[in-house]
Image (cartoon, rainbow, N blue to C red; front, side, top):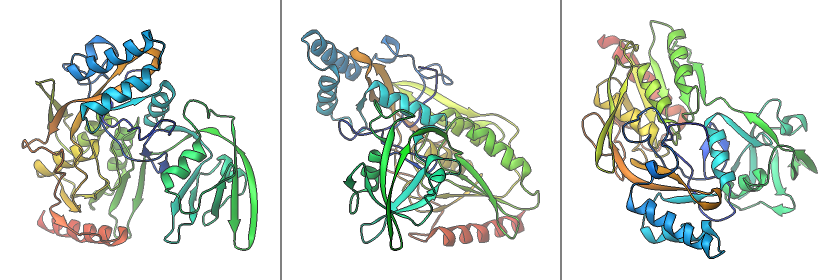
Length: 394
């Protein structure tokens, strides 16, 4: 596995399920956890093996897996039982295929058909977006179409996460080139489409401009290259208007990309501190960020992990006004270790804190201006109003 600094690995919710991620609007299913680089090496992912498994929980899980393998039993099932007994809320075990799929997602890649979907109040599953050039796009599927079945399984009333798991197939078997048959409806027309899954790429950073000139930078997840994309967006933004950094629904990603994003707005300095097995570490922004631009960060209950780390840094250092609702509260640190048979265990080894020493885990971040359950556009409008005041103050 190639080196990465994982802040937010997937959380497995049951055997056979695909990775529990939601990255860049690519629905893969569920909630996210997190992990930090190895102690003493803040820009590298911890190596698999003894260096990453010094904690007792890791040793216990490895021992359980090894004993199961020696007895001819499933190492992965034994490891899952050990993790369950540990009481680690974010601890999880993944198959080799599941973990590889997660790494690809962090690179902004996934295997699928290119559909975004949501469940309506009546339980129907509606297509909300089709990725241009994807298998779904080539088949003529459009936004607003109703998805009724996947490979013969009815989807009405089912959670979207289950539907997406069916669309993507099992992470160990559903590679690019495998097929999936969708039942669809559009008005009075009902039909089926047999699609071939493909390797697709996503853009986790999108940029738009409001009529008054304010630039909105939406980060869906911190995948590879997101920090550079944010820097480019800041450079291209009008000099006389503010920036809205939209982190709503951002479940985390690569810690290096979150730190790189902070460097777009800070002139160096502390981003976060964290501990790994009691050893204290810190993360710092690079100097030279655009510190003079008025900045508002939008957050909600889906803002997690690395996105909370970034929010906390901007808030604590007085760089941004945070608007929205309380964030999720995922501030614990997981590290991976390889198990017999190729599976991977992720167990909690520590927690991170904001520059002023605030713990996020279980608490989340309280916005400076709470807009409650305001819809997306209302929150943006409030952010634009606040930016106008910040500009007047300057």
